[in-house]
Length: 178
Image (cartoon, rainbow, N blue to C red; front, side, top):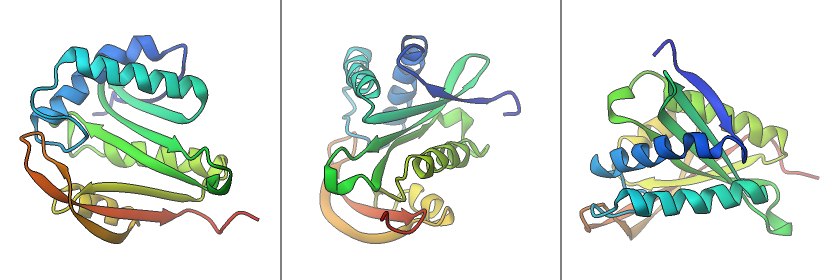
């Protein structure tokens, strides 16, 4: 994927990437990713979800990156910035997605590196995430230095509707804020 480019999505550029983000989300759900949607998700529902993401990008509570190849979105990741006064040191890694035909090319690691760098820049030294227990994502996150904090049974259902356990992970990027 030597022509793939990492880009930060801004309020102004969001409309350009929205169709590709919708396709990416539909690809992930079709592949069985437990990312908050069931098999019956359609482009309209995915578009509505990304309209919400766009609003949060506008508010500054969510950051979004994409990787594009030939101007097609092949991967994305989000960082939800905690807005509570007592949680300004943390952020949640959300919806790291890589198209099924673009996996195993380092795009996920590239996205994680970008969001970790931005989190540090913003003083967010504690990142956390959840992922389906037993999924291929667990060794991926562990390889990036994320620590497993525990597991919650029957936390979310797969796109097919079967409830599955979820593992919680965290990574400390720096010491606590003063």
